[in-house]
Amino acid sequence: MPNIYKYLVLILFCFFSSNCFSQVYKFQTTSVSLTFKNNKGIWDSWSKPKDASIIVTFDGNKNRIIVYSEIVQLFEIIEYIPEKSSKTEDKSIFICKNNDGEDCQISIITLKDQGNRKEMYIAYDEKIINYHIKLMK
Image (cartoon, rainbow, N blue to C red; front, side, top):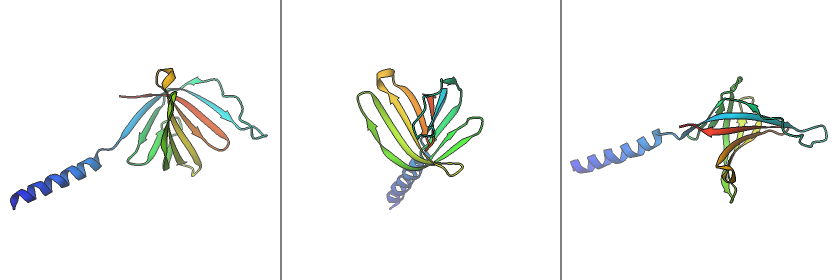
């Protein structure tokens, strides 16, 4: 009978410890550019990329993405869209709400044909923010 308790404790330990380890990814931005919709509903040209050194965290267990810009941007992940993959890119898409309650879509794209360079797009109805990002170790 004591062996059963040992196994039960071991199983419970494994179950709870696996839930305690969160998947948190940290990124560092290298540049940022923007585009806006004009009065006719057409997207303008992208702004010239500006250097930007900002930390971005993706926390899958807490369902949030945080961009530590001058004004911290907190995004609650509402829905995970299945990852899309092609010969040239991998794309992860998240439907989110920002800290002001606005809906947006965040896409993290790995460009395979450009040395696995990563970009993050935060798309609202009227603007899109593009960050070039690197995974931090």
